Each structure stands twice: as structure tokens, then as C-alpha cells.
Image 1: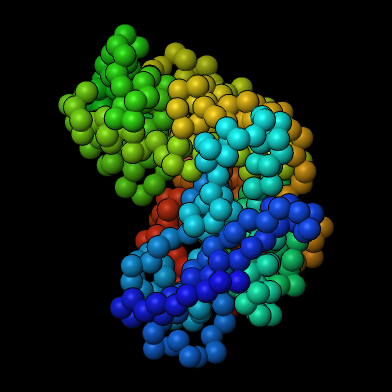
Image 2: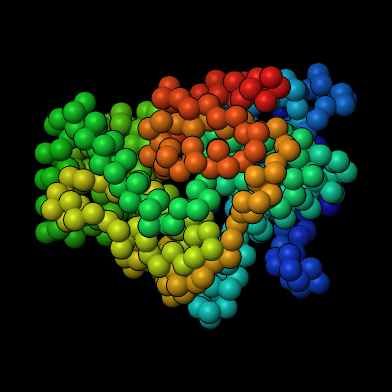
Amino acid sequence: MQSITYRPPGLRVTEHTLQVPLDHARPEGERIEVFARAVVLAEKADAALPWLLYLQGGPGFEGPRPTSADSPAWLRRALADYRVLLLDQRGMGRSTPVGPDDARALAPAALAERLALFRADAIVRDAECFRQALGIDRWSVLGQSFGGFCTVSYLSMFPGSLREAFITGGLPPLQAGIDEVYRDTYRSLQQKTAAHYERYPQDRERLRQLVARLAADDVRLPGGDRLTPQRLRQLGLLLGMGTGSEKLHHLLELPPGSPAFLHDVESASPFTRNPLYAVIHEACYANGQASAWSAQRVMPAAWAEDPTLLTGEHVFPWMFDEFAGLAPFREAAHLLAQRPWGPLYDPAVLAANEVPCAAAIYVDDMYVPRAFSEQTARQIRGLRPWITNEFEHDGLHTGQVLGRLIEMVRR
């Protein structure tokens, strides 16, 4: 493992790069790099603190880059008790990246087999490699969103490695099929869209006019992609966050076709920055089944009838035609959609769980349906749920949630 330490104001940060097997079932085969950043308060740098592993949401996003002990906001509470390891999940950030050049270098079938090795189970095994390399007996884990899915896999696979588990907006369904999940997300999104138009009634007509214009005209984004009606409607992704409705309104109020409008629309569609998000997103919910483009198949008829209904955290086959950065992954993505995925969780192990756990379940969560999260909470022995409507899916980043979960576990 390669390491380097630096000292930003108030912190001591050590960067670690570790080589791990691409396929943990073949440890003698190809190896990739996985990066993690260890953070501790400067005044506690020499203290014997326990470790907290942070697993980011996604899939398709690297760990946060702290600029101080207060950024991200939850970090201050974590650093009061822990050394924190911020993992760049495989394929992300400073870990060996996955990009269009990799896609072009491989035949679609070979690329699909490679990308199949980037799910939660592989991320957990990477974390175990780090735990062992750092000489840690047991550590705590904090999982946000998809990081919570990874945490439940961790509880299934290596419960003996964990002291505590904290989950925010990320208790995955254990039995529900992927189609059930996506039907629920559409119901939630319809409610979020209606609430947005109630708050900003002028936005409905703005969106209707924009959709009509984009259907008739070839409008190009700064990166060169055509802005189509269906791509515009993906702005609903914003509505699941605490200030998302305001961000959507401020985007829609810009003059259509202006550089600012086109730039902000493109920035609100992060799919090409980390292609893994689009390529394996549905696989996160495909626990022992094929995804078969579920979001496309179960989309309600209302979305065809009403052009002002938005889409959210849904991935569609057309994206691999309309996003130039995703096009090299097109054939592999179709192969992965038909792949019968193996299980990610072990219900028997979870039913016998002895790791202290607490989870924040957000009543109005647009991304991870509340009903399935509550079912999962009942199936993990000893897990203490906190069901709240005070926050949206990004509640962890308010800085108020982690302290509550720590108190719940310690009680």
C-alpha cells in the first residue's frame, strides 16, 4: 500500500492507494487500484481512536473531498469519535477509473463481464482489503444511499469485521423485485412533481413549452449532445434533495437556449462524468434477478400522456444513444440488463445479526422507497430505525443525522 500524509487546517489526512484483485474470486488475476483518504482531527492525530469507514452513494460517485472538519457537514461529528476512511469505490475518483477508452478497448461481452465486477459485493471486499492492510480489527461503517446498500452487504458477508453500522437513506429491499421498486419510485416522483408545481405553478407551463420546442428544434448542449425532451425531463432527479425544488425552479426560470440554461441542464445530468452510474445502477436493485431495463418497462402511461411529468433516478436504454459519453457502453449495458445477477444479501445472517445498527429512513425518500426500507429494518436483528420526515434523501449532509444515529446505537 502506498501512503502520503498532509496537514490541511485542523486535520491530518493520509492518502492510501491499495492494489486489489479486479475479481476477488481470482486473486491471482488482474489487479486494480483502490484509493481511500484517512482523516483525523489534528489535535487527535496521535490518539487511539476507532475507525469509521464511509461508503458513498451512487453507484458512480467517489468519496467526499474534505475542505475542513466541517465540510462535509457530518464530518465534524464523526471526527469527534473516530478516524474516518473516505473510500473512492472501485472505478471512481482516484481509484482505477472506468471510462469510454476502456469500453472501446474491449468487445461488448468482455466489457460486460468486467463491469459486472463493480457491484456492492466487490466494494465490500475492497473495504476488507483496506481494513486488513491498515491492521484494523473491527471498524464502524457509515453508508449513505447506495453506501447503505453496501453496508447491508457488509453485514451479510463480514459481520465479524464491524463494530457498528449507521445507514442513511439506504436500506435496500431484501425480497421485493426490481419492478416493485421502480413502480414505487414513479409514484413518489409523481407526488414530488405535483408538489413542485404547487409551489412554482409557472414552471409547469415553462416545461411544457420547452418540451414542445425541443421536439421541434435541434438544440445542442455545450458538450455537443442534443437536448431532447426526454433528457430535459430527467431534471426530476433534483427533486429528491432538500433544496432540489428550488434548484429546479432557478434552472427553469433561465431564458431557454441561453448559455446559462444549457450549461445548467447539462450539469444537472451527471451520467457521463462517471459512466458506471448509468451502466450498473439498476443492478443495485437486481438482487438475484435480471433488471431487464425495469425503469423503462414499468413507466406508467401517465408519463406518455403528460409531458410535464419528470423522471428521476431512472436509467433508460435511450440514454446510451443520446449521451455521447455513454455510447461506448451501449452493447455492454444491454447485455448487463439481461444478466441474471447473484444475491447481494444473506437474510439468514441478517436475521441473526449482532452488530449494533441504526438507520435513518426518510418518509418522503424519492430514491429508496420507504416501505421497503421499513421491511428490511424489521429483518435485520437489532437494527434501530429512525423514521423521519424532517429530511430528504440527502439528510446526512445537513450535519444533524449522524449524531442521532450514534446516540441510538449507544443507547
